Length: 108
Image (tube, rainbow, N blue to C red):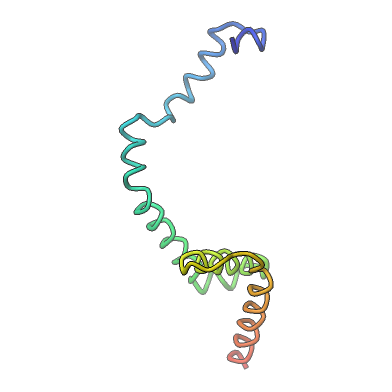
């Protein structure tokens, strides 16, 4: 069907798809991932937070990068605590402005 649609030989489609089939998980791998997904994602989250707290990386980050990370963390925290994420942008902007103000006060 795919070969007919693209008007190529079936072997051409087979060759293209074969190299990608190695990336597909087996049912057992998928089940293992599903059973451990929360733990895996918690581990990834922890690694990302470590990087966010690296002062050398923060110094190199643009204000947009910091603001985006701040907004993502704020949204995640609100979700974790059962709060709404609707209209959070205003709260995030205010919190970021307060954090930047406090940071500049401590730098003086």
